[in-house]
Length: 112
Image 1: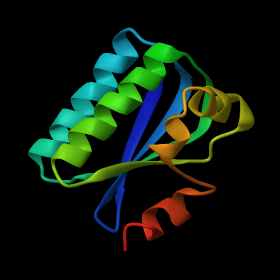
Image 2 (image 1 turned 90 degrees about the vertical axis):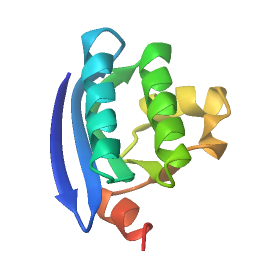
Image 3 (image 1 turned 30 degrees about the vertical axis):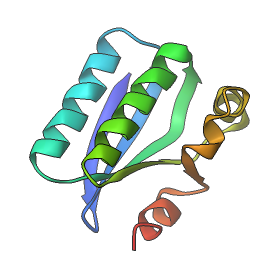
Image 4 (image 1 turned 180 degrees about the vertical axis):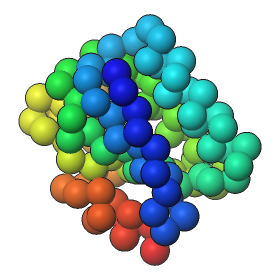
């Protein structure tokens, strides 16, 4: 999985590409979140538009990041979920935990 980072309006945008499955990509994602918290950026948008698949380990890394950010006064919002990625979130009832937006811009705007 490839992760591209950018900052827009004091919000860290993480654009993921590939599969969110566990293993080293989870470590890379976690390191970015830890670095973000050290830099006191606590609002994150994860752009899922180029994620082809996510398993329970991938969902777990998103939950872990969400928990860390919320405990620091921030949040994690998801953008551009397709039906294939939205389904595991709905099945696990995490759609009541994650905020899901149709675009990165809408997710960033929601922080205002």
